[in-house]
Amino acid sequence: MKSRAAVAFGPGQPLKIVEIDVAPPKKGEVLVKITHTGVCHTDAFTLSGDDPEGVFPAVLGHEGGGIVVEVGEGVTSLKPGDHVIPLYTAECGECKFCKSGKTNLCQAVRATQGKGLMPDGTTRFSYNGEPIFHYMGTSTFSEYTVCAEISLAKVNPQAPLDKVCLLGCGVTTGIGAVHNTAKVKEGDTVAIFGLGGIGLAAIQGAVQAKAGRILAIDTNPEKFKLAKEMGATDFINPKDFDKPVQDVIVEMTDGGVDFSFECIGNVDVMRAALECCHKGWGESVIIGVAGAGQEIKTRPFQLVTGRVWRGSAFGGVKGRSQLPGMVEDAMAGKIQLDPFITHRLPLEQINEAFDLMHEGKSIRTVIHFGDA
Ligand SMILES: NC(=O)C1=CN([C@@H]2O[C@H](COP(=O)(O)OP(=O)(O)OC[C@H]3O[C@@H](n4cnc5c(N)ncnc54)[C@H](OP(=O)(O)O)[C@@H]3O)[C@@H](O)[C@H]2O)C=CC1
Ligand SMILES: N[C@@H](CCC(=O)N[C@@H](CSC=O)C(=O)NCC(=O)O)C(=O)O
Ligand SMILES: [Zn+2]
Ligand SMILES: [Zn+2]
Image (cartoon, rainbow, N blue to C red; front, side):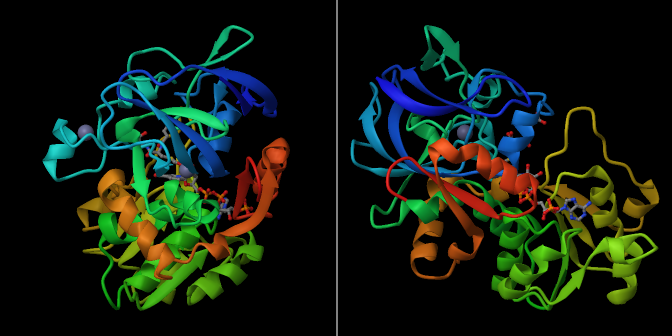
């Protein structure tokens, strides 16, 4: 079938809106009509060419919501008409990772997913007869996409897809990192570096956890207003100080924070986020994605003296089991999605969404394929 899609033909190039061919779903696969998709910084990261797993031409996008159109052989858990959120972290329930009870990082389709292919090693997308790669197992920048059954969470059909699509990445990642990875408790002091979609969601998670102080750090002071509305208590622009931001935070918090979250993808900030943690127990969670070849560093003494460095992918959330409940939470007002949506644009204007992000003017732009 034909599908309108924003295709990344090469690194650093604007996406091109073209009509691609989408082949039917094979065994264990599902054809989904995407109605809405957010644009996450990770899409920009891969488009920039900094992603070691980036392959071109590809259909990017991983923060979508849609409706099942057709299921392939052997698919039992989904049927046409079901509302779904594509998952870049699958959940097969059967692999060593799924069974471990220790991680959400299902590996059932991860190897082929990282190569831009479906689990059988081929692609369902083509343009002018040439193959187009998938992305993160989701490719939500195409009106019709094919995903593995285990890469789809079935959600309440009453949920507004134009909002809950954000649970496909950003909001879930930030909130989940606070609850599942850090396990923030009432009264804890928390520092959040980077106040985009992920950082603001981490603030929301910290408020839910009843954190005592929530320090919001960003070099773009325009981001503080929303952070305050979300519930942050202290606001720090590192550019306002002539000493490292970690020293500023340690002084402000009587020795450092209980938890910090890096939501930018900057390895220098990752160091600051670790070093602003309290001696003896402070834990820092890396969420931001850094480019190929970049490495983190600190003095090992920082760890010897009790600070802990962790990482979090998709907020530690198991998508098929837990995302439907988060959708219910959003419908019940326990998770706020509206504040994240600063812009809405049709697919044809998707490059403007990337511009807005790079200019620091948006939190999330939601792209619509039909009506807004
Ligand atoms: N681990 C995971 O599962 C996931 C990771 N990610 C990653 O999380 C990161 C954040 O994503 P997202 O929220 O969409 O990105 P955004 O670009 O929306 O937000 C990043 C924020 O950090 C600010 N910033 C940039 N540099 C600095 C600095 N040196 N010090 C303080 N603040 C700074 C930016 O300011 P400005 O406005 O000037 O740009 C912006 O406000 C990305 O690296 C993304 O790839 C995303 C989703 C899931
Ligand atoms: N491909 C990159 C790494 C990209 C990465 O870290 N992705 C995050 C999700 S970012 C979402 O917006 C993630 O969950 N990673 C876990 C995974 O299994 O990919 C590289 O190679 O550096
Ligand atoms: Zn993302
Ligand atoms: Zn698995």
